[in-house]
Image 1 (cartoon, rainbow, N blue to C red):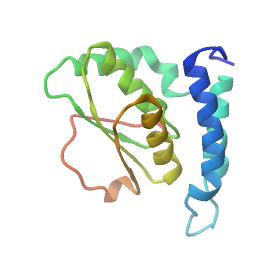
Image 2: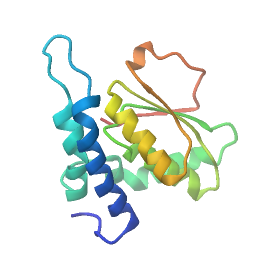
Image 3: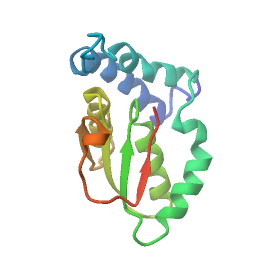
Image 4: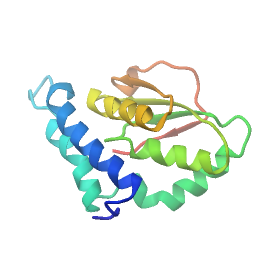
Length: 153
């Protein structure tokens, strides 16, 4: 396991894994053509993260800290769009970078799967953050301009 079990981050991730497994069967959308869902993926992804056997935004933490942190220091870089993320890890990287420089981002999280948006909402609630989430196709999403757009998965 990449994160030590006694750290708050590891505890949060293990709790997320249980939440993802609970949510995925009922929240993951059914593909119109195949009738399959992404529940197998979203219900299992946090466990893969906890085991440290997948590449996640955390893998590139130093890059995100430097890049997002540099932008967070600039006036006007506050509106962030996260488009597509298997769970809350990209959200976590954005917050870490902005927190490090004392800036507060305005984050909109969009994913076509309601499980991903529910996990983002869950993370925000657990960490005392406020975000806006939308489940749906990013190509159909209509919102005000953003200063930074990022994605993972």
